[in-house]
Length: 125
Figure 1: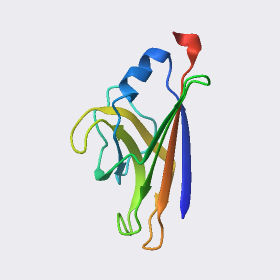
Figure 2: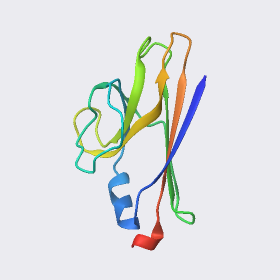
Figure 3: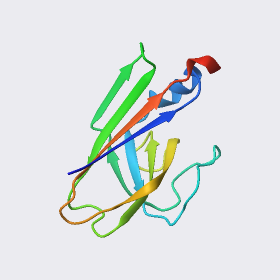
Figure 4: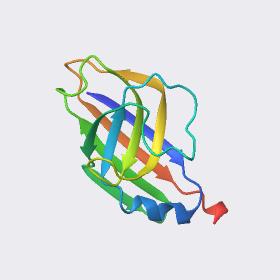
């Protein structure tokens, strides 16, 4: 199993309102590199979307954590280059987009556990 964790500073606590509605993690296989743009509304090349399996909130430390697994049978022989959090099974609103600095090359023996931790920077309230 490939375990991948991403921690992002999301700014201030007002930004957390959007994450209350997040229900799905999407995987993209684009050739994009670089950084995300705040005006992004989706992934460049979404290939698979899956419901979030675990969602926890640690208000004391300002953390939201989302987890899901990418099954062995999905995206075989693809390279995952971007991940997004959405509020719907299809379409919907993009809450967070991550461009992977180290893309994941998926094989038919890999089950991938993705953990995304969103850290609130309370200094920007």
